[in-house]
Image (cartoon, rainbow, N blue to C red; front, side, top):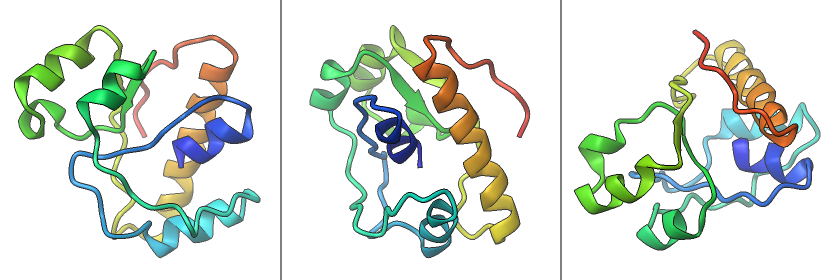
Length: 122
């Protein structure tokens, strides 16, 4: 979701995960279509050290990267890491996924305006 919102605002963005799913969850595709963004052809990708090296900023959604990523990867991320501490939309009801989507959109818009989003309770 964050990648799609960022790209719609003209930002360069790439989404990846520590344990990517086989496909984007259908409910996520549905709620993004409600915002006019079609992510049905998006393919989840594995986060790599190269992606982190090339990034100006690494935003995590709340996953425990310290537990899942090798230490050198975590160390290279720390200087440019923001953790948004958001729920995983997987297996959530559509109403909850909409709230997660709206929060991601709000934070991406803040980034596009040059501000680092503040953590808030979702």
